[in-house]
Length: 147
Image 1 (cartoon, one colour):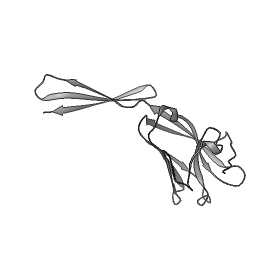
Image 2: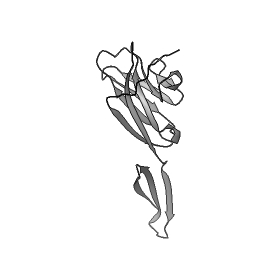
Image 3: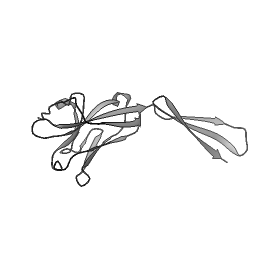
Image 4: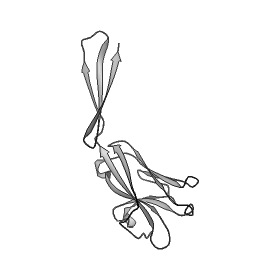
């Protein structure tokens, strides 16, 4: 059984954005001297049931974690994102007493939408629009299919 002490104070907030249905990487740095300590990603209050993955198990469900001890950065990949995955997470480093936490805020945009339109032109047959949405901003990418 794992025991983690929760604290709601963090020195910084890591902002991560992604799209529903895709994957994101959350990278957290740590100070020298903690290379051999266990790292983890958790949600909510970081109780036992809130720990999503630890470096001692490296892969659990849709979460994968890797610790680059030379760079002192551990990275968690969250795959197959759903709207329920948005919100506050914590990067944690296990130590005696209080663990070390860094707050992570994950924001998700809508899944990319694909629209096409048939032209009666003999050169361009389809115009493809890819739309992504982040923080009420729309990004539109246009592609053409030539025949």
